[in-house]
Image (cartoon, rainbow, N blue to C red; front, side):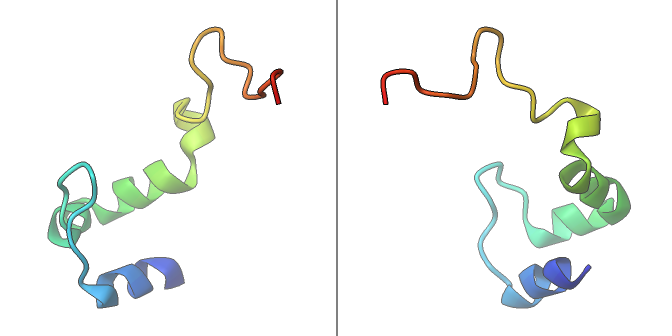
Length: 57
C-alpha cells in the first residue's frame, strides 16, 4: 500500500492505458490484486514461442 500512496500523492498523468488515478481507485482492491498477483492471472507468461532469452546476445 505504501507504493500506491506514493503514486496517488504524485498526481501524475494517466498511464499508457489512459486510466487516471481516480479510475484505478474506483476498484482499488481488484486493481491492486491484478498488479500484485500477475502470475495468477497469466499476465507474466511469455507469448507463444517466446523463451524470454536472446540467443543472439
